Length: 477
Image (cartoon, rainbow, N blue to C red; front, side, top):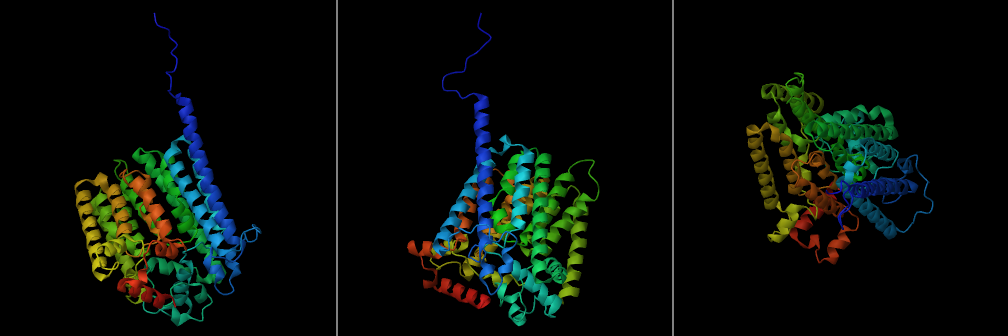
């Protein structure tokens, strides 16, 4: 008779030990993200520095916010400060990947509490690097205070406005969606300072709502809610670049994810009738905030359980958006074409253009990239028309391809696809998202020119690079 008690085999790790190790990895990863983001916020608020570029423009120390002065020992050497920032970003990135991989070992409420804490800290932070927030405010003030249509006039025509010196784009007509610009105007009565904090509060609220929707979608799709929340809510790109930079992708992405929730909810036989038209209307609203999201409107409409109702919702929203454009902006549309001619050094089209002997992403390379992206979106639409259940996968793939195909790509653009990556649709996007995060962070570093020069690449030595440099200088001068 064999014994009822079995001994563990040599070399086999007990299950409870493996679980403890996984929980330890997740906890360390979570702590790393909280510590790194917390350091960036407090360091940026200490004094005017490159950690919050608007604080260096003119006399605007007020942007440092209520956390000003908490780190008196912070280095004053710009080179050291940049190096410390890179270290913090690496710690946050590694911590995010670890927490994402091991997230099921943590309790959901612990993850949600950490995400909420980070958002509160970022609400109190000054605008972090690569921010466009004062561009948003200036375009809103142009329309509300100066009688200038931001889709026809350039910010230089409002050079006397107190926000002008804090904005980046001085000769670029607004590339932002009409619904967003209208909302920017609505915040103007709060004043120069109040506008910033009101918009930051809206950004934080929108980001937290999106995290909640991602968790709700994960529950409906039968995937780990902890892993979904960690993948999206702890991403350094969401926290540092998107929420920390107070970008308008947040409200647009909230609409996209809400539309996706309506699509999934509409699969239930007992789903309320309103979810189908809401899916179409929310998708159009996202495009009205951020025109780039127009590419996924057909996918979300086709993925709805009741397509006629979804089409009707999208049609009504499109008509409403058209009225906003006509009545508020005289029929003028966002200037996405001018910004679309710009090129960032590490964008995929630029790298392919260099490899093909074009000196970078010239007009031909940009046109090819656009055709390829539209073809991918068309194929995705055909797939969703055939299989509704693949709608979220198609949205994730198309948004990921959009980031890869943009000649002018900013780090936070990857956040567009992250909710769908977080839901593991398809799984191959997860490792690609980690690699793309590292690539985009490097592309946004202030040390990038030195990195490129040390590798023997001098963008302005090519005609394409020189043309891009001159156009960029014209827009910001």
